[in-house]
Image: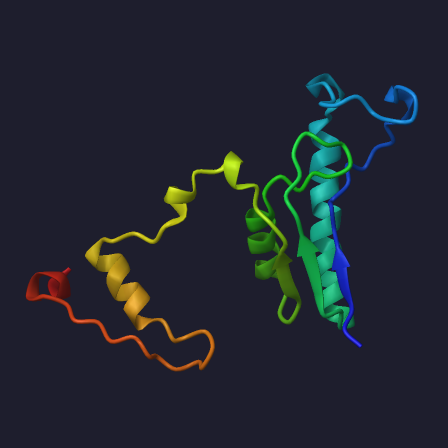
Length: 143
């Protein structure tokens, strides 16, 4: 059996006193956000992911959430990168990025000669062997 955890990184302070009926107002006004609570929350979750890795969990999933007190996961890519620095075997799943909030064109690989050489040197992720063959002009090779 594989064991994965889905983590919203919930804000670590009770906000029940702010509810209107059964729901919190949306968006929740920024005056209710406490940076020290967020710092503590992120630190606790980073430690939890390290512990999950040590205990043999298979993975943790991230999903993008904004302006929600139920989740501080506003950048799953960034938190997955932070988790990757601290774990060895834990699989990190990014379930989704909210593309309208990002400029997808900025995520395209660079076309500079240096970036081309780096991409050409990478192994194929499926077969783990380098299958790309790149030719560089004399100018590109000297960069």
